[in-house]
Image (tube, rainbow, N blue to C red; front, side, top):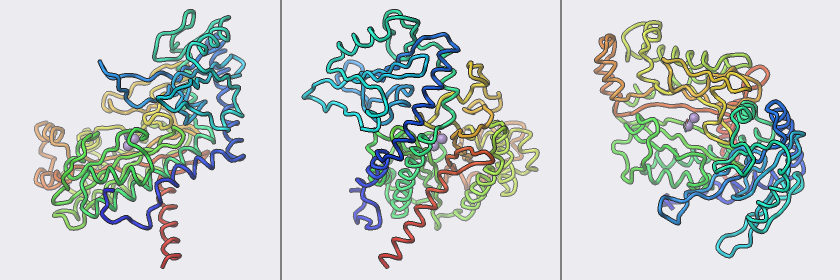
Length: 478
Ligand code: GLY
Ligand code: MN
Ligand code: MN
């Protein structure tokens, strides 16, 4: 236990995944899951028809091994398979979908005394046509018989079976395109994932306030979410002080930061394979120049929420990204980091040195979900503009898309050195920048679902719910 004294108000880890998983097995949730399967059936039927396939075989995937080793990295299913069979560890299984949308799960449940064989939850067993096989060989024979006739696609990391067409781009593009729109079932999973991540964020903030190290914070985060590290949708970024200037900082310092200035924590959670991706930036109250840095953090937080009002179906995500750069230009000029007008800071691209990543990305089964750079179902690619090469989402906003909104302001030495040495170097307040560098940077990241006339902010709702329940618990106990 990383905390010397357990927090009695913290939920027990075991109740966290359990509550949602138990809910997922209720009749109401079963109905949602069946609706989800119907939508998938219709999507695949259309995509197979358009690409003239009779059927597709989606392989869950096999365990990989490290080079010259008998140890495996954690197993992750093929996301095309996982969308049908969410949250089940079933390496070696496959799903066949026919062009009329009917699906059959070829489920491998091999007898084994080294590992526990997978089991199918009732929700899946009762909703899908399932054939259970006791060996990989029997399953392969069953698959060959089932897909023997007709033109078959196979989506897999491994070589295709004889006669199947391996990972046809035209088919995958159509499914990736559709996957951006989350079904009600998927949205429920993401709401649960968000609640789980928020518990982690609250525990992490407490640990940091108690002066604990990045490593200890990472452990508290796991405990509060009830996740193992391997179950997280991505490696948690727990960055104290100037580590916050490294966009994907990957280490956990065992020593506590001293003096304590910033905690930038970008950490998620999962529910039945669906991800939350949340970042918060905390500023220590008593660090030198904390008032200055907190003013920047608060300004970015306000601008991030203001951006939400611009999101609605039909808006281009690129326009939101540009609006974020205009907001960063306002903040940096109003706080005297850049000595020019906000218009000049934006027009001359100065904000790109402070915000080098994209405003956000699609979110779902993968933390950077697929299809963000597609213009249409057939896979025409819209690359990000040359000025914003890291932007992962160039699509037009549509109802039921789920994506992140994650503006940042960072003090990254190599980028600011470049700005200082360039033609606009004189516009940079280098004295102030030197004072801000030890804080690293700021990122505020929320996950939103697009509605008919705006967004539902999953992250802010989950933080508000957590605050309400803490208040109620306090009343009950106090
Ligand atoms: N956690 C990675 C990202 O925010 O994109
Ligand atoms: Mn993130
Ligand atoms: Mn993100």
